[in-house]
Amino acid sequence: MATADQVEAKEEFQEVNQEDELEEDQDSAALSPELLVKHPLQNKWALWFFKNDRAKEWTANLKLITAFDTVEDFWALYNHVQKASKLPSGCDYSLFKDGIQPMWEDSQNKDGGRWLINLNKHQRHSDLDNFWLETLLCLIGESFEEYSDDINGAVVNIRNKGDKLSLWTKDARRQDAILKIGRKLKERLNIPPKIPIGFQAHTDTMTKTGSTAKDRFRV
Image 1 (cartoon, rainbow, N blue to C red):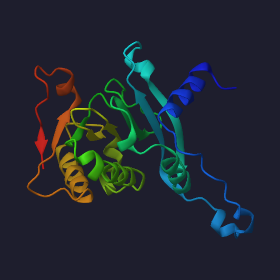
Image 2 (cartoon, helix red, strand yellow; image 1 turned 90 degrees about the horizontal axis):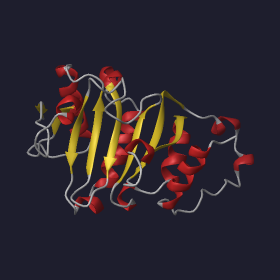
Image 3 (cartoon, one colour; image 1 turned 90 degrees about the vertical axis):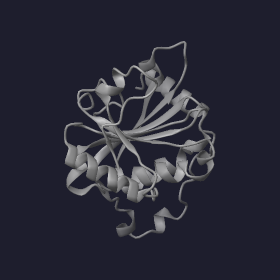
């Protein structure tokens, strides 16, 4: 039986996801068994949704939507939810390995950091959705190869002043892994070489004195 929190999570999520539900495949019965076999992912992933309600604690605004571990279930989910560019300001999507919560305080995140990409207002319509999808495909496809174990997840923040996309790693001290992950991300997103992206340790972000934390690495 669903808990009250689970029911509330689904109701809040549906407020900003107005797309029609996926139609059932009427021809599924005619498909050969080979076409019905799902393709497993190396890791199980969980999609989280954050809606900024100032009347609630931050953690109360963060809701686990669902988890998946096959290619087909990923696409079913991605095609069902609202695109990032259509979310109201103050909302986030997060995709993390199952068992890791998208917050600094999680034991898997506390020693890590994030590659951060800042987008201007015009890029919400030109680049944001493509960047987010490509980042998701990098995650579930283990595109960082031998450094994929360093990856915890990714977050997209929708904000009036400019959206942000970040890739979270588990250990900010692993410089070689971090730099190679950053270069691969930049390559996959087709970010021009003249435009740098920066890596910030979560400990620096939590103790920052200004509006932004200092980058530990840049590529």
